[in-house]
Length: 567
Image 1 (cartoon, rainbow, N blue to C red):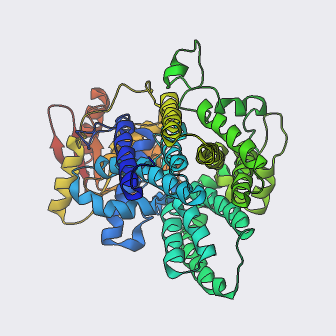
Image 2: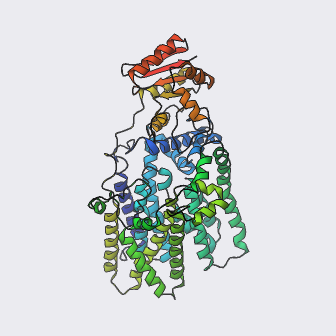
Protein backbone atom coordinates (compact mmCIF):
# COMPACT_ATOMS: atom_id res chain seq x y z
CA UNK A 1 0.00 0.00 0.00
CA UNK A 2 2.99 2.29 0.34
CA UNK A 3 2.97 3.06 -3.40
CA UNK A 4 -0.56 4.49 -3.14
CA UNK A 5 -1.36 7.99 -1.99
CA UNK A 6 -2.62 7.91 1.63
CA UNK A 7 -6.07 9.25 0.75
CA UNK A 8 -6.55 6.75 -2.08
CA UNK A 9 -5.31 3.89 0.08
CA UNK A 10 -7.80 4.86 2.80
CA UNK A 11 -10.69 4.93 0.34
CA UNK A 12 -9.75 1.49 -1.00
CA UNK A 13 -9.55 0.08 2.52
CA UNK A 14 -12.93 1.53 3.47
CA UNK A 15 -14.47 0.13 0.29
CA UNK A 16 -13.06 -3.28 1.20
CA UNK A 17 -14.59 -2.98 4.67
CA UNK A 18 -17.94 -2.13 3.09
CA UNK A 19 -17.88 -5.22 0.86
CA UNK A 20 -16.86 -7.53 3.72
CA UNK A 21 -19.57 -6.04 5.94
CA UNK A 22 -22.18 -6.94 3.34
CA UNK A 23 -20.76 -10.46 3.05
CA UNK A 24 -21.06 -11.01 6.81
CA UNK A 25 -24.52 -9.41 6.93
CA UNK A 26 -25.73 -12.12 4.57
CA UNK A 27 -25.76 -14.43 7.58
CA UNK A 28 -28.43 -12.24 9.21
CA UNK A 29 -30.67 -11.17 6.33
CA UNK A 30 -31.10 -11.39 2.57
CA UNK A 31 -29.31 -8.44 0.97
CA UNK A 32 -31.91 -8.25 -1.79
CA UNK A 33 -34.74 -8.22 0.74
CA UNK A 34 -33.92 -5.87 3.64
CA UNK A 35 -37.26 -6.70 5.26
CA UNK A 36 -36.16 -10.31 5.81
CA UNK A 37 -34.31 -11.66 8.83
CA UNK A 38 -32.84 -14.91 10.12
CA UNK A 39 -34.93 -15.07 13.29
CA UNK A 40 -38.28 -13.34 13.66
CA UNK A 41 -39.16 -14.37 17.20
CA UNK A 42 -37.45 -14.36 20.60
CA UNK A 43 -34.77 -11.79 21.34
CA UNK A 44 -34.53 -10.43 17.76
CA UNK A 45 -38.29 -9.75 17.74
CA UNK A 46 -38.06 -8.17 21.20
CA UNK A 47 -35.21 -5.91 20.07
CA UNK A 48 -36.96 -5.02 16.80
CA UNK A 49 -40.01 -4.01 18.88
CA UNK A 50 -37.88 -1.88 21.22
CA UNK A 51 -36.15 -0.21 18.30
CA UNK A 52 -39.46 0.53 16.59
CA UNK A 53 -41.18 1.82 19.72
CA UNK A 54 -38.37 4.15 20.79
CA UNK A 55 -38.10 5.41 17.19
CA UNK A 56 -41.87 5.97 17.15
CA UNK A 57 -41.76 7.82 20.49
CA UNK A 58 -38.83 10.03 19.45
CA UNK A 59 -40.83 11.37 16.51
CA UNK A 60 -44.12 11.83 18.42
CA UNK A 61 -43.59 12.02 22.17
CA UNK A 62 -39.93 11.86 23.29
CA UNK A 63 -40.95 11.81 26.95
CA UNK A 64 -42.63 8.43 26.34
CA UNK A 65 -39.61 6.51 25.04
CA UNK A 66 -39.78 4.07 27.97
CA UNK A 67 -43.59 3.78 27.90
CA UNK A 68 -43.70 0.81 25.57
CA UNK A 69 -47.05 -0.56 24.38
CA UNK A 70 -46.53 -4.14 25.69
CA UNK A 71 -47.31 -5.55 29.18
CA UNK A 72 -50.46 -3.37 29.32
CA UNK A 73 -51.57 -1.77 31.63
CA UNK A 74 -48.20 -1.67 33.40
CA UNK A 75 -46.01 1.33 32.49
CA UNK A 76 -42.42 1.68 31.28
CA UNK A 77 -42.18 -1.72 29.64
CA UNK A 78 -39.13 -0.64 27.65
CA UNK A 79 -37.23 -0.39 30.95
CA UNK A 80 -37.61 -4.16 31.33
CA UNK A 81 -34.96 -4.52 28.64
CA UNK A 82 -32.34 -2.34 26.90
CA UNK A 83 -33.60 0.95 25.45
CA UNK A 84 -31.19 1.25 22.48
CA UNK A 85 -31.85 5.00 22.42
CA UNK A 86 -28.90 5.94 20.19
CA UNK A 87 -29.77 3.21 17.69
CA UNK A 88 -33.38 4.41 17.62
CA UNK A 89 -32.16 7.96 17.01
CA UNK A 90 -30.32 6.73 13.93
CA UNK A 91 -33.37 4.68 12.96
CA UNK A 92 -35.47 7.85 12.88
CA UNK A 93 -33.68 8.65 9.61
CA UNK A 94 -33.85 5.05 8.33
CA UNK A 95 -37.46 4.10 9.06
CA UNK A 96 -39.06 6.24 6.31
CA UNK A 97 -37.28 4.06 3.73
CA UNK A 98 -38.56 0.75 5.12
CA UNK A 99 -41.93 -0.97 5.12
CA UNK A 100 -41.59 -2.99 8.30
CA UNK A 101 -39.66 -3.41 11.55
CA UNK A 102 -36.66 -5.19 10.03
CA UNK A 103 -35.36 -2.62 7.56
CA UNK A 104 -33.75 -0.24 10.06
CA UNK A 105 -32.76 -3.16 12.28
CA UNK A 106 -30.82 -4.77 9.42
CA UNK A 107 -29.18 -1.52 8.38
CA UNK A 108 -27.99 -1.07 11.96
CA UNK A 109 -26.42 -4.54 11.88
CA UNK A 110 -24.57 -3.50 8.74
CA UNK A 111 -23.52 -0.27 10.48
CA UNK A 112 -22.18 -2.28 13.43
CA UNK A 113 -19.84 -4.16 11.10
CA UNK A 114 -18.85 -1.27 8.87
CA UNK A 115 -18.57 1.29 11.69
CA UNK A 116 -16.40 -1.07 13.72
CA UNK A 117 -14.06 -1.59 10.78
CA UNK A 118 -13.66 2.13 10.14
CA UNK A 119 -13.28 2.90 13.86
CA UNK A 120 -10.63 0.24 14.46
CA UNK A 121 -8.78 1.38 11.34
CA UNK A 122 -8.72 5.07 12.31
CA UNK A 123 -7.77 4.39 15.93
CA UNK A 124 -4.80 2.14 15.22
CA UNK A 125 -3.61 4.20 12.27
CA UNK A 126 -3.33 7.24 14.52
CA UNK A 127 -1.90 5.36 17.50
CA UNK A 128 0.73 3.34 15.60
CA UNK A 129 1.20 5.29 12.37
CA UNK A 130 1.00 2.00 10.45
CA UNK A 131 -1.67 1.62 7.79
CA UNK A 132 -1.07 -2.14 7.68
CA UNK A 133 -1.71 -2.49 11.39
CA UNK A 134 -4.74 -0.22 10.96
CA UNK A 135 -6.22 -2.46 8.25
CA UNK A 136 -5.78 -5.45 10.52
CA UNK A 137 -7.34 -3.64 13.50
CA UNK A 138 -10.40 -2.61 11.51
CA UNK A 139 -10.83 -6.14 10.20
CA UNK A 140 -10.42 -7.71 13.63
CA UNK A 141 -12.74 -5.35 15.51
CA UNK A 142 -15.46 -5.61 12.85
CA UNK A 143 -15.53 -9.34 12.16
CA UNK A 144 -14.58 -10.96 15.46
CA UNK A 145 -16.76 -13.95 16.26
CA UNK A 146 -18.20 -12.32 19.39
CA UNK A 147 -20.56 -10.37 17.13
CA UNK A 148 -21.88 -13.55 15.50
CA UNK A 149 -22.41 -15.08 18.92
CA UNK A 150 -24.71 -12.14 19.69
CA UNK A 151 -26.53 -12.22 16.37
CA UNK A 152 -29.85 -12.07 18.26
CA UNK A 153 -28.69 -9.17 20.48
CA UNK A 154 -28.59 -5.93 18.52
CA UNK A 155 -27.95 -4.11 21.80
CA UNK A 156 -24.71 -6.07 22.32
CA UNK A 157 -23.28 -6.46 18.82
CA UNK A 158 -23.52 -2.69 18.22
CA UNK A 159 -20.16 -1.82 19.79
CA UNK A 160 -18.82 0.04 16.75
CA UNK A 161 -18.32 3.37 18.52
CA UNK A 162 -15.82 2.16 21.13
CA UNK A 163 -12.69 2.84 18.99
CA UNK A 164 -13.98 6.32 18.16
CA UNK A 165 -14.46 7.04 21.88
CA UNK A 166 -10.87 6.02 22.64
CA UNK A 167 -9.52 7.96 19.66
CA UNK A 168 -11.20 11.23 20.56
CA UNK A 169 -10.45 10.89 24.27
CA UNK A 170 -6.71 10.74 23.56
CA UNK A 171 -7.01 13.59 21.07
CA UNK A 172 -8.91 15.69 23.60
CA UNK A 173 -6.36 15.04 26.34
CA UNK A 174 -3.60 16.03 23.95
CA UNK A 175 -5.42 19.03 22.47
CA UNK A 176 -8.53 20.07 24.46
CA UNK A 177 -10.36 21.71 21.55
CA UNK A 178 -14.11 21.92 21.06
CA UNK A 179 -13.77 19.57 18.09
CA UNK A 180 -12.02 16.86 20.08
CA UNK A 181 -14.15 17.03 23.22
CA UNK A 182 -17.26 17.38 21.08
CA UNK A 183 -16.27 14.27 19.10
CA UNK A 184 -15.62 12.34 22.30
CA UNK A 185 -19.00 13.36 23.75
CA UNK A 186 -20.84 12.43 20.56
CA UNK A 187 -19.29 8.99 20.23
CA UNK A 188 -19.54 8.21 23.93
CA UNK A 189 -23.27 8.95 23.90
CA UNK A 190 -23.73 6.96 20.70
CA UNK A 191 -22.09 3.97 22.39
CA UNK A 192 -23.31 4.28 25.96
CA UNK A 193 -26.93 4.87 24.93
CA UNK A 194 -27.08 1.54 23.08
CA UNK A 195 -27.32 -0.54 26.27
CA UNK A 196 -26.29 -0.53 29.91
CA UNK A 197 -23.83 -3.35 29.23
CA UNK A 198 -21.99 -1.29 26.63
CA UNK A 199 -22.21 1.85 28.78
CA UNK A 200 -20.36 0.11 31.62
CA UNK A 201 -17.87 -1.69 29.36
CA UNK A 202 -17.09 1.49 27.41
CA UNK A 203 -16.61 3.47 30.62
CA UNK A 204 -14.09 0.91 31.90
CA UNK A 205 -12.28 1.00 28.55
CA UNK A 206 -12.05 4.79 28.59
CA UNK A 207 -10.83 4.83 32.17
CA UNK A 208 -7.98 2.52 31.15
CA UNK A 209 -7.25 4.64 28.06
CA UNK A 210 -7.22 7.82 30.15
CA UNK A 211 -4.78 6.34 32.67
CA UNK A 212 -2.36 5.35 29.92
CA UNK A 213 -2.78 8.65 28.06
CA UNK A 214 -2.21 10.59 31.28
CA UNK A 215 1.30 9.14 31.49
CA UNK A 216 2.23 10.71 28.14
CA UNK A 217 0.25 13.95 28.39
CA UNK A 218 0.80 17.07 30.44
CA UNK A 219 -2.56 18.29 31.68
CA UNK A 220 -3.18 21.90 32.62
CA UNK A 221 -6.00 24.21 33.59
CA UNK A 222 -7.05 24.59 29.97
CA UNK A 223 -8.09 20.92 30.05
CA UNK A 224 -10.38 21.27 33.06
CA UNK A 225 -13.33 23.30 31.77
CA UNK A 226 -13.94 21.43 28.48
CA UNK A 227 -13.46 18.10 30.27
CA UNK A 228 -16.07 19.05 32.88
CA UNK A 229 -18.47 20.18 30.17
CA UNK A 230 -18.04 16.93 28.27
CA UNK A 231 -18.52 14.98 31.50
CA UNK A 232 -21.83 16.69 32.24
CA UNK A 233 -23.07 16.11 28.69
CA UNK A 234 -22.07 12.44 28.88
CA UNK A 235 -23.45 11.66 32.31
CA UNK A 236 -26.66 13.70 32.04
CA UNK A 237 -28.61 11.49 29.59
CA UNK A 238 -27.46 8.31 31.33
CA UNK A 239 -28.54 9.63 34.71
CA UNK A 240 -31.93 10.67 33.31
CA UNK A 241 -32.49 7.12 32.06
CA UNK A 242 -31.10 5.51 35.20
CA UNK A 243 -33.86 7.00 37.40
CA UNK A 244 -36.81 5.23 35.72
CA UNK A 245 -34.76 2.06 35.33
CA UNK A 246 -34.07 2.09 39.06
CA UNK A 247 -37.74 2.66 39.78
CA UNK A 248 -38.96 -0.25 37.67
CA UNK A 249 -36.31 -2.54 39.12
CA UNK A 250 -38.23 -2.29 42.40
CA UNK A 251 -41.63 -2.94 40.80
CA UNK A 252 -40.77 -5.91 38.60
CA UNK A 253 -39.00 -9.26 38.68
CA UNK A 254 -35.76 -7.38 37.99
CA UNK A 255 -35.38 -6.85 41.73
CA UNK A 256 -35.16 -10.60 42.30
CA UNK A 257 -32.80 -11.03 39.35
CA UNK A 258 -30.45 -8.35 40.66
CA UNK A 259 -30.43 -9.85 44.14
CA UNK A 260 -29.76 -13.38 42.93
CA UNK A 261 -27.25 -12.54 40.19
CA UNK A 262 -24.26 -11.96 42.43
CA UNK A 263 -24.83 -15.22 44.27
CA UNK A 264 -25.13 -17.35 41.13
CA UNK A 265 -22.10 -19.41 40.28
CA UNK A 266 -20.49 -18.31 37.07
CA UNK A 267 -18.22 -19.97 34.59
CA UNK A 268 -15.88 -22.85 35.23
CA UNK A 269 -12.46 -21.20 35.52
CA UNK A 270 -10.77 -24.35 34.26
CA UNK A 271 -12.48 -24.25 30.84
CA UNK A 272 -13.57 -20.64 30.43
CA UNK A 273 -10.42 -19.30 28.79
CA UNK A 274 -10.14 -22.40 26.62
CA UNK A 275 -13.14 -21.04 24.72
CA UNK A 276 -10.99 -18.22 23.35
CA UNK A 277 -8.87 -20.58 21.27
CA UNK A 278 -11.25 -23.48 20.57
CA UNK A 279 -13.22 -22.89 17.33
CA UNK A 280 -17.03 -23.05 17.69
CA UNK A 281 -18.98 -25.40 15.47
CA UNK A 282 -20.35 -22.50 13.41
CA UNK A 283 -16.91 -21.99 11.84
CA UNK A 284 -15.47 -24.19 9.10
CA UNK A 285 -12.72 -25.56 11.36
CA UNK A 286 -15.08 -26.05 14.28
CA UNK A 287 -17.62 -27.90 12.15
CA UNK A 288 -14.98 -30.53 11.34
CA UNK A 289 -14.38 -31.36 15.03
CA UNK A 290 -16.47 -34.40 16.10
CA UNK A 291 -18.76 -33.75 19.05
CA UNK A 292 -17.93 -30.03 19.17
CA UNK A 293 -20.08 -28.53 21.94
CA UNK A 294 -18.94 -24.94 21.43
CA UNK A 295 -21.69 -23.16 19.57
CA UNK A 296 -23.27 -19.71 19.36
CA UNK A 297 -25.72 -19.97 22.25
CA UNK A 298 -25.08 -20.12 25.96
CA UNK A 299 -22.61 -17.21 26.23
CA UNK A 300 -19.71 -19.66 25.92
CA UNK A 301 -18.39 -18.92 22.42
CA UNK A 302 -15.68 -16.44 23.33
CA UNK A 303 -13.60 -17.36 20.31
CA UNK A 304 -10.73 -15.04 19.29
CA UNK A 305 -8.88 -17.16 16.77
CA UNK A 306 -5.28 -18.32 16.55
CA UNK A 307 -4.07 -15.59 14.16
CA UNK A 308 -4.94 -12.67 16.50
CA UNK A 309 -3.43 -14.44 19.49
CA UNK A 310 -0.23 -15.20 17.58
CA UNK A 311 0.07 -11.60 16.40
CA UNK A 312 -0.67 -10.37 19.93
CA UNK A 313 2.17 -12.52 21.27
CA UNK A 314 4.52 -11.12 18.62
CA UNK A 315 3.42 -7.56 19.40
CA UNK A 316 3.88 -8.06 23.14
CA UNK A 317 7.41 -9.42 22.78
CA UNK A 318 8.43 -6.80 20.22
CA UNK A 319 7.06 -3.84 22.21
CA UNK A 320 8.75 -5.08 25.35
CA UNK A 321 12.08 -5.48 23.59
CA UNK A 322 11.88 -1.98 22.12
CA UNK A 323 11.32 -0.26 25.45
CA UNK A 324 12.91 2.89 24.08
CA UNK A 325 9.71 3.35 22.06
CA UNK A 326 7.79 5.05 24.85
CA UNK A 327 4.53 5.19 22.88
CA UNK A 328 4.67 1.50 21.97
CA UNK A 329 5.30 0.60 25.59
CA UNK A 330 2.16 2.46 26.67
CA UNK A 331 0.09 0.73 24.01
CA UNK A 332 1.50 -2.55 25.32
CA UNK A 333 0.51 -1.63 28.87
CA UNK A 334 -2.97 -0.62 27.74
CA UNK A 335 -3.48 -3.82 25.74
CA UNK A 336 -2.26 -6.11 28.51
CA UNK A 337 -4.24 -4.17 31.11
CA UNK A 338 -7.47 -4.51 29.13
CA UNK A 339 -6.94 -8.25 28.68
CA UNK A 340 -6.37 -8.72 32.41
CA UNK A 341 -9.28 -6.53 33.51
CA UNK A 342 -11.60 -8.11 30.94
CA UNK A 343 -10.60 -11.59 32.10
CA UNK A 344 -11.21 -10.75 35.76
CA UNK A 345 -14.66 -9.26 35.11
CA UNK A 346 -15.88 -11.72 32.50
CA UNK A 347 -15.58 -14.79 34.75
CA UNK A 348 -18.56 -13.57 36.79
CA UNK A 349 -19.49 -12.89 40.37
CA UNK A 350 -18.81 -16.32 41.88
CA UNK A 351 -16.63 -19.01 40.32
CA UNK A 352 -17.84 -22.50 39.57
CA UNK A 353 -16.01 -23.60 42.72
CA UNK A 354 -17.84 -21.05 44.88
CA UNK A 355 -14.99 -18.51 45.08
CA UNK A 356 -16.21 -14.90 45.33
CA UNK A 357 -14.65 -12.93 42.50
CA UNK A 358 -13.89 -9.18 42.17
CA UNK A 359 -17.15 -8.48 40.33
CA UNK A 360 -19.02 -9.77 43.39
CA UNK A 361 -17.44 -7.14 45.64
CA UNK A 362 -17.92 -4.41 43.05
CA UNK A 363 -21.63 -5.30 42.92
CA UNK A 364 -21.84 -4.87 46.69
CA UNK A 365 -20.57 -1.32 46.25
CA UNK A 366 -22.56 -0.64 43.06
CA UNK A 367 -25.72 -2.84 43.26
CA UNK A 368 -26.76 -1.93 39.70
CA UNK A 369 -23.91 -4.14 38.47
CA UNK A 370 -26.02 -7.08 39.60
CA UNK A 371 -28.15 -6.40 36.54
CA UNK A 372 -25.22 -7.29 34.28
CA UNK A 373 -25.74 -11.00 34.76
CA UNK A 374 -24.05 -12.08 31.52
CA UNK A 375 -20.59 -11.15 32.73
CA UNK A 376 -19.00 -12.90 29.74
CA UNK A 377 -19.81 -9.74 27.77
CA UNK A 378 -16.97 -8.00 29.58
CA UNK A 379 -14.85 -10.06 27.18
CA UNK A 380 -15.14 -7.09 24.84
CA UNK A 381 -12.34 -5.57 26.91
CA UNK A 382 -10.22 -8.64 26.14
CA UNK A 383 -10.96 -8.33 22.44
CA UNK A 384 -10.04 -4.64 22.49
CA UNK A 385 -6.77 -5.46 24.22
CA UNK A 386 -6.03 -8.23 21.70
CA UNK A 387 -6.77 -5.77 18.89
CA UNK A 388 -4.12 -3.37 20.23
CA UNK A 389 -1.53 -6.05 20.93
CA UNK A 390 -1.98 -7.81 17.58
CA UNK A 391 -1.79 -4.44 15.83
CA UNK A 392 1.56 -3.85 17.52
CA UNK A 393 2.64 -7.17 16.02
CA UNK A 394 1.86 -6.06 12.47
CA UNK A 395 3.20 -2.55 13.10
CA UNK A 396 6.60 -4.19 13.50
CA UNK A 397 6.62 -4.78 9.74
CA UNK A 398 7.14 -1.05 9.25
CA UNK A 399 10.28 -1.17 11.40
CA UNK A 400 11.87 -4.11 9.60
CA UNK A 401 14.01 -3.87 6.53
CA UNK A 402 11.47 -5.74 4.43
CA UNK A 403 10.18 -4.56 1.11
CA UNK A 404 6.79 -2.83 1.42
CA UNK A 405 5.22 -5.34 -0.95
CA UNK A 406 6.36 -8.25 1.22
CA UNK A 407 5.02 -6.55 4.35
CA UNK A 408 1.70 -5.96 2.61
CA UNK A 409 1.52 -9.61 1.57
CA UNK A 410 2.11 -10.73 5.16
CA UNK A 411 -0.67 -8.40 6.35
CA UNK A 412 -3.04 -9.65 3.65
CA UNK A 413 -2.28 -13.26 4.57
CA UNK A 414 -2.96 -12.61 8.26
CA UNK A 415 -6.25 -10.90 7.42
CA UNK A 416 -7.33 -13.69 5.07
CA UNK A 417 -6.49 -16.41 7.61
CA UNK A 418 -8.42 -14.55 10.31
CA UNK A 419 -11.51 -14.24 8.12
CA UNK A 420 -11.22 -17.94 7.36
CA UNK A 421 -11.09 -18.66 11.10
CA UNK A 422 -14.15 -16.63 12.05
CA UNK A 423 -16.56 -16.63 9.10
CA UNK A 424 -19.75 -18.41 10.21
CA UNK A 425 -20.73 -21.11 7.76
CA UNK A 426 -23.21 -23.04 9.94
CA UNK A 427 -25.66 -21.17 12.15
CA UNK A 428 -28.63 -22.61 14.12
CA UNK A 429 -31.32 -21.64 11.62
CA UNK A 430 -32.25 -22.54 8.05
CA UNK A 431 -31.49 -19.14 6.56
CA UNK A 432 -33.14 -15.72 6.45
CA UNK A 433 -36.92 -15.83 6.48
CA UNK A 434 -38.59 -14.01 3.58
CA UNK A 435 -39.92 -10.48 3.93
CA UNK A 436 -41.93 -9.91 7.09
CA UNK A 437 -45.70 -9.62 6.74
CA UNK A 438 -48.13 -8.44 9.42
CA UNK A 439 -50.76 -10.94 10.51
CA UNK A 440 -54.46 -10.66 9.69
CA UNK A 441 -55.06 -9.90 13.36
CA UNK A 442 -52.64 -6.97 13.42
CA UNK A 443 -54.04 -5.61 10.18
CA UNK A 444 -57.47 -5.85 11.78
CA UNK A 445 -56.32 -4.01 14.92
CA UNK A 446 -54.86 -1.27 12.75
CA UNK A 447 -58.14 -0.86 10.88
CA UNK A 448 -60.28 -0.95 14.04
CA UNK A 449 -58.08 1.57 15.79
CA UNK A 450 -58.38 4.00 12.88
CA UNK A 451 -62.17 3.61 12.89
CA UNK A 452 -62.38 4.20 16.64
CA UNK A 453 -60.08 7.21 16.46
CA UNK A 454 -58.03 6.25 19.53
CA UNK A 455 -55.44 3.76 20.69
CA UNK A 456 -56.96 0.52 21.81
CA UNK A 457 -55.73 -2.20 24.16
CA UNK A 458 -55.68 -5.82 22.94
CA UNK A 459 -54.84 -9.25 24.28
CA UNK A 460 -53.62 -12.07 22.04
CA UNK A 461 -54.43 -15.76 22.43
CA UNK A 462 -52.82 -18.26 22.75
CA UNK A 463 -50.72 -16.88 25.63
CA UNK A 464 -47.37 -18.65 25.14
CA UNK A 465 -45.86 -17.25 28.36
CA UNK A 466 -47.82 -19.70 30.51
CA UNK A 467 -47.11 -22.83 28.45
CA UNK A 468 -43.45 -22.48 27.41
CA UNK A 469 -40.27 -22.16 29.45
CA UNK A 470 -38.88 -19.67 26.94
CA UNK A 471 -41.91 -18.29 25.07
CA UNK A 472 -40.19 -16.87 21.98
CA UNK A 473 -43.45 -16.78 20.01
CA UNK A 474 -44.87 -14.30 22.52
CA UNK A 475 -42.46 -11.74 21.08
CA UNK A 476 -44.15 -12.05 17.67
CA UNK A 477 -47.20 -10.29 19.14
CA UNK A 478 -44.94 -7.39 20.09
CA UNK A 479 -43.39 -7.39 16.64
CA UNK A 480 -46.85 -7.31 15.06
CA UNK A 481 -47.80 -4.31 17.19
CA UNK A 482 -45.24 -2.20 15.32
CA UNK A 483 -47.93 -1.78 12.63
CA UNK A 484 -50.46 -0.02 14.85
CA UNK A 485 -48.70 0.70 18.20
CA UNK A 486 -51.86 -0.29 20.06
CA UNK A 487 -51.47 -1.35 23.68
CA UNK A 488 -51.09 -5.11 24.06
CA UNK A 489 -51.39 -7.17 27.23
CA UNK A 490 -48.84 -9.73 26.00
CA UNK A 491 -45.12 -9.30 26.53
CA UNK A 492 -41.75 -11.02 26.30
CA UNK A 493 -38.59 -9.82 28.02
CA UNK A 494 -36.01 -10.75 30.60
CA UNK A 495 -38.39 -9.63 33.34
CA UNK A 496 -42.03 -8.71 33.90
CA UNK A 497 -43.89 -6.13 36.01
CA UNK A 498 -45.14 -7.13 39.44
CA UNK A 499 -48.73 -8.38 39.15
CA UNK A 500 -48.63 -9.01 35.40
CA UNK A 501 -48.13 -12.77 35.66
CA UNK A 502 -51.05 -13.07 38.09
CA UNK A 503 -53.31 -11.18 35.69
CA UNK A 504 -52.09 -13.37 32.84
CA UNK A 505 -53.07 -16.56 34.67
CA UNK A 506 -56.58 -15.20 35.13
CA UNK A 507 -56.79 -14.12 31.49
CA UNK A 508 -55.76 -17.61 30.43
CA UNK A 509 -58.86 -19.06 32.17
CA UNK A 510 -61.01 -17.59 29.40
CA UNK A 511 -63.91 -18.33 28.66
CA UNK A 512 -64.40 -18.28 32.44
CA UNK A 513 -66.40 -15.21 33.44
CA UNK A 514 -63.63 -14.11 35.82
CA UNK A 515 -61.27 -13.66 32.86
CA UNK A 516 -63.77 -11.49 31.00
CA UNK A 517 -64.41 -9.46 34.17
CA UNK A 518 -60.69 -8.76 34.72
CA UNK A 519 -60.21 -7.82 31.06
CA UNK A 520 -62.98 -5.23 31.38
CA UNK A 521 -61.57 -4.00 34.67
CA UNK A 522 -58.17 -3.48 33.04
CA UNK A 523 -59.85 -1.62 30.15
CA UNK A 524 -58.86 -4.11 27.48
CA UNK A 525 -60.77 -3.36 24.27
CA UNK A 526 -60.02 -6.28 21.97
CA UNK A 527 -59.72 -10.04 22.46
CA UNK A 528 -57.67 -11.44 19.56
CA UNK A 529 -57.91 -15.16 18.88
CA UNK A 530 -55.22 -16.32 16.46
CA UNK A 531 -55.63 -19.31 14.19
CA UNK A 532 -53.00 -21.15 16.28
CA UNK A 533 -55.58 -21.39 19.09
CA UNK A 534 -57.39 -24.73 19.09
CA UNK A 535 -60.73 -24.77 17.29
CA UNK A 536 -62.52 -26.12 20.37
CA UNK A 537 -61.27 -23.36 22.66
CA UNK A 538 -61.84 -20.64 20.08
CA UNK A 539 -65.45 -21.72 19.64
CA UNK A 540 -66.00 -21.89 23.40
CA UNK A 541 -64.63 -18.35 23.86
CA UNK A 542 -66.78 -16.90 21.07
CA UNK A 543 -69.93 -18.68 22.24
CA UNK A 544 -69.46 -17.59 25.86
CA UNK A 545 -68.67 -14.02 24.74
CA UNK A 546 -71.95 -13.87 22.80
CA UNK A 547 -73.89 -15.60 25.58
CA UNK A 548 -72.80 -12.98 28.13
CA UNK A 549 -73.51 -10.16 25.66
CA UNK A 550 -70.08 -8.63 26.22
CA UNK A 551 -69.66 -6.94 22.85
CA UNK A 552 -69.23 -7.39 19.12
CA UNK A 553 -67.43 -9.80 16.81
CA UNK A 554 -65.39 -7.50 14.57
CA UNK A 555 -63.42 -10.11 12.63
CA UNK A 556 -63.90 -13.79 11.91
CA UNK A 557 -62.26 -15.34 8.84
CA UNK A 558 -62.05 -18.80 7.34
CA UNK A 559 -58.51 -19.30 8.66
CA UNK A 560 -59.74 -19.05 12.26
CA UNK A 561 -58.65 -15.50 13.15
CA UNK A 562 -61.15 -13.74 15.42
CA UNK A 563 -61.28 -10.28 17.02
CA UNK A 564 -63.85 -9.60 19.75
CA UNK A 565 -64.54 -6.10 21.05
CA UNK A 566 -65.47 -5.68 24.70
CA UNK A 567 -68.05 -2.96 25.32
